[in-house]
Image: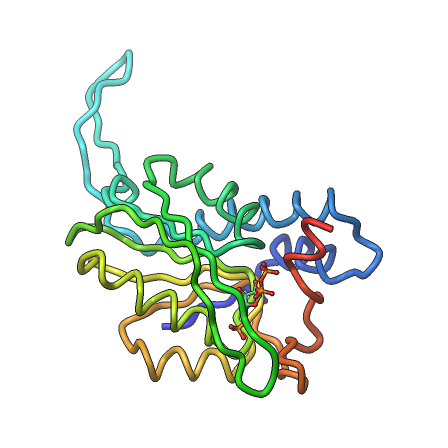
Length: 209
Ligand code: PRP
């Protein structure tokens, strides 16, 4: 499934600040961290929970733990996913983290080069979260998923991003039908240079200058 959060006012307010061209690198990075935290929180609503007996100082009752939160691998796609990952691990604090680089070549081929891949072993009970703020043509994430799937079969593969273009979503669905996508919003289209419109510009440049 593809989930977006246009109906969540606070997520939309953070996105508004990220889109605004006047937002400098410091609030831009902070915005990505915040979004990571709230997107992870939304994701926990789809995770397996387990009831546990607990004792308050007064009596015995039943509590819950989010079982799947214990088995998470986050793949950080350099560069722009770094602040997003920082937010994700505030909620998914048990996560093991993989780092990959993927840079997109120029139009019309948009070829992906992956120079650095460091991914922990993936276990059958794991939820693998691929963090990348922008899903434009989808080429980057298709390549990253091809690579990550070599490290073991996971229970779930979830892309967590900020913005997605419809083209990217359908290309990823076609190449990796088992992958779920959580994005703050789905934007209108891509321009000829592969940028999302209305978008927020180049997330890597805006976060890191
Ligand atoms: C951007 C973005 C995604 C990718 C999306 O990264 O952060 O990783 O492009 O494009 P796609 O869906 O068309 O593949 P970029 O290659 O600009 O690298 P950067 O994060 O280092 O700036």
